[in-house]
Image 1: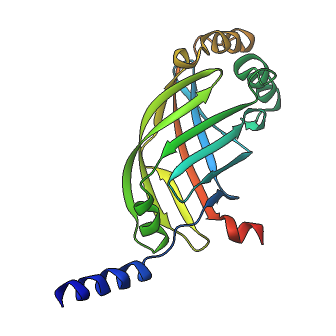
Image 2: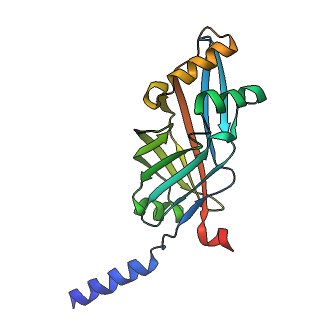
Amino acid sequence: MNKRLALFCLGATLAATPVLADWEVADGSQIQFVSIKNNAIGEVSHFETLSGTVTEAGEVEVRVALDSVETNIGIRNERMKKLLFEVGLYPEAVITAQLDPAVMVAAASGAGDSVTAMLQIDLHGQVVSKRAALKIAATDSGVSVTTVQPILLNASEFELEGGVAALQKIAGLNAISRVIPVTVALQLSSADAASR
């Protein structure tokens, strides 16, 4: 009798648990970075074009179109594309990670949670692992995934030192920081809803 009752309770629990579907990166998602020049002036830039998915297994893939960089100065955009990112050779950056599917289910049900995840960042031909603290929460249109604190990227890790030096020289600057804080704010919508 106890065994039957336990099986009934388990079945009821599973039936009440929301099914996790695939999610897509939606409008309003942002990846921003801060550059510091001459050791005194900080500037916030971002990328205009992001795409990607989070599968029901918690597999994350976000693609960043590097030629969509927006620094609010046209000539600087072009210099970054050509001299730093070399978009002709490396048109995009790809971020992958593995999240616990149960955390996504909980978030979709309205229960926010903070998790730590290892991100694999494929940029400029180099793949670097970075630990990130993330906040996952339900929104009116789906789920949000945001960094709790900036992720620090070093130009040398991605063989971008030469590009930074070229930018510094062409702009006539005394210094450009080689360590760049990056923040991520993804808005995810159901892939089923997006396809309708």
